[in-house]
Length: 333
Image 1: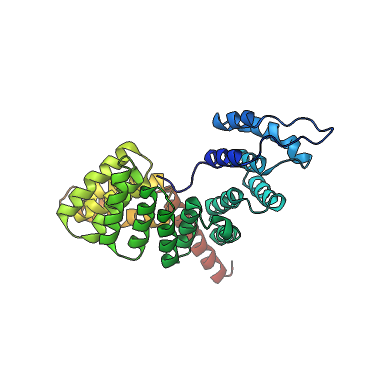
Image 2: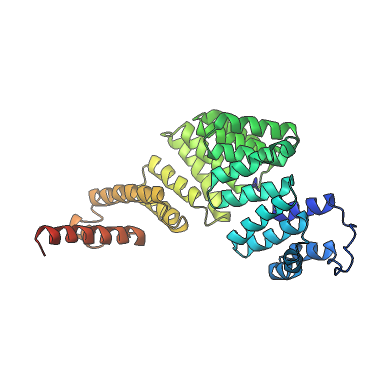
């Protein structure tokens, strides 16, 4: 379950709130029926959405729902600067539109500009005071800014305003885990999973907290590994789950199996630095184990060894080039 509601839902909500029977200025071409744009959004015909709404934008006749729909299309086209400009212009043209502020905050979160996301939400604080979706979004931003108490309070307000219970408990679990309250996190994740039993990312975070609460317990590691395998069976590219599997195998004393999990984590994370560190650690443990069992000789391992990710090879190459350049400079060459 994701906190970020699909932009289509925001557009639909805004369409319902807006007056669709507004008079067309004299001499102006009639606007396309709102339902036509809704259908284009529903069927993800993004180019057609742009074609339908760009003339109104150029003529300065776009309303709040049009700005939101056009920004959604630009986001889908990966035109983030254009989407940002549309949302900012929409807020300038139609001040106080909560949906536009939230869409802008989500865009900034997407590009890791969390401070700007916070500013966008702060600008809509009055309008969002009674909005469960706003409070959820605010909680996420505050959590990313490590304002954990404020984030927790925002999530509790969201619950009081009727937000989805799985969303609230999942995020409260994240806050508890960040505070190293693993038992508290387990309770929230279990509640979220009860409400949304098919949610793989909730199951993964529950598994992570279960292992963190008993990090050296083989029985717990076995339990968590079964959960991890269920997650990756349905979500092959969940690199966080693969990494958790590697940690479980290390607790179970099987670094060779851990290396296989870590390699998958490395592949799907696109060489996330923390996963590179994990892979390096478990590969060294696997090498030592295989050598101790006589499966590999130290000489053979130097020649074959575990696979080295391309990013690590590239950094090794650059380091060697830098070292050589330093030697050349020292020799006056």
